[in-house]
Image 1 (cartoon, helix red, strand yellow):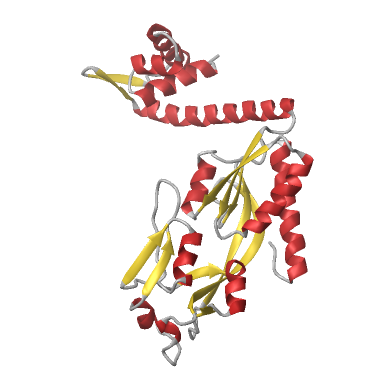
Image 2: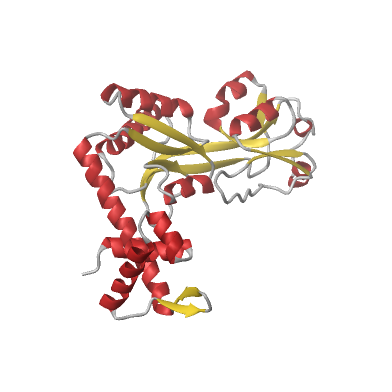
Length: 300
């Protein structure tokens, strides 16, 4: 029977580029790593590597095996994490990625409720944008996420629907045209855009404006728009005070001046989620629902 240690040795050789480096990564002797891989090949009756010069390269069969082995090791690690969480009770720490458009006061209210039930569980919040949220889930950097989409292979439910407005300061040139701004008018002015978080950043502006400032956080974008440096999209919830005071105004476009976006509550591993993750998710849903009902808004 092939053991997990043999699969780990095989994957380590592939990832490290050789037996010596794999041995260092696994804190084993090179001979034990070599034996584990040879034993795996013998039990399966295949050759996973072929020698090319001084290097060992994967055969087509080996390429298939390494992909299956990674999935097997991921599943084994998930089972171990689940067992540890169940045996230890509530998790000592929970990671949560949340899109920056999600109202922070809802987060903090949920965290406070959670703390009353599990004061010793730490919460690590990752404030993310679009691809960064999906990346945090894919890398298992977090246990839970409030995301704009449910990535393939993950489980999630609708949580909150947000209304977005395109706004500028009340005295911005776009508000002094005496008519509805056109796309051409927008292109002639500076646009504020929030950069996607994560390693792969592919910021997609709404229009190709002549000038564009790309920032890393929506709070920075809001500061710039408040100061009159340009226009940008914001969730209505974030700028209620400015809209009420009249310091920011929605741009009166004939069409396209507002958008709606759905936010989802997504588990990194629903089956392996510990009691703390499940309870925090439940509290987030309850908090959003109760607050939306009281404000007459739409929850997921």
